[in-house]
Length: 120
Image (cartoon, rainbow, N blue to C red):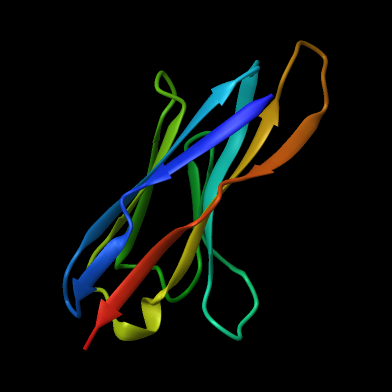
């Protein structure tokens, strides 16, 4: 199977920075896309950023403050977050599209989530 191990969440003051990491392991042939979503209490889960090949996509709130990157050799996606605001407080989830075998289909996997709390 596939496991996604997230790390890097925590408590930070407004204006601070955090870097989230998500490493994929298990039965993997290729990883077409990786990304991050977040869900704040009482709100729907929303896209933060994604990366497909070298093409990145950001939610409007993430542009200019967050940077997504990936290390293909490590099967890891990163989210560097800067100038954090209290409204960035949420559980951040790693999301990946994975092909597990040659000619296999694309499956979507989610991480368990990591809490990011920004204090004012």
